[in-house]
Image 1 (spheres, rainbow, N blue to C red):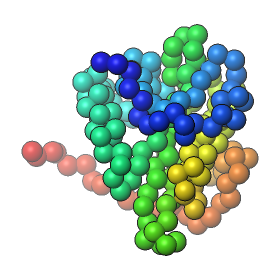
Image 2: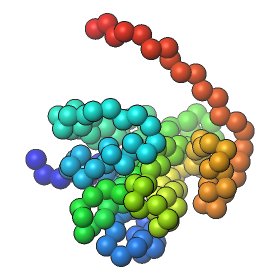
Image 3: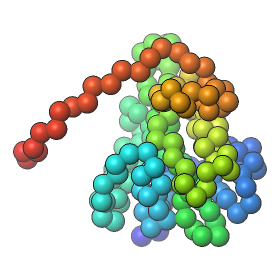
Image 4: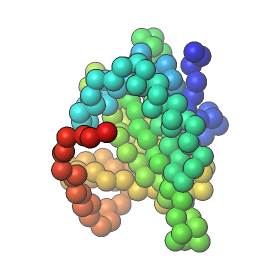
Length: 177
């Protein structure tokens, strides 16, 4: 199987690419990023689980096939080209709304930078690239949820604090299929 991109490269910001450290590239998530450590980078955020390559490809293919429906998924990565490894990642979901005359809203999720790469402003580059994608897709706003300790970082990225996040976690039950 060839290394298939989740979406077309024309949504990637050339300004963000130019601001990256040498030997780093920002691009759409690719089907081969399972081997490049994409899931390991996400482990800095939360529990990821043990995916087999088949499970990874099944989810990637599903997202790629359905990326034209109600919510668009734009997952990007930054790679260390010397090591051929994913070192940072993030996603913006573009949601179709009724408000703002059937407007679009970008939701940023899952910003992660490998511990060995922190301090290189890769998180900032991921955020700016996702904001760029939201703007190019026609979003009237791009939003995200974050912990209180991360508010200063997101303010540096150009966000302002608004409202409060609420969460309800579904009780864990034994699956019955």
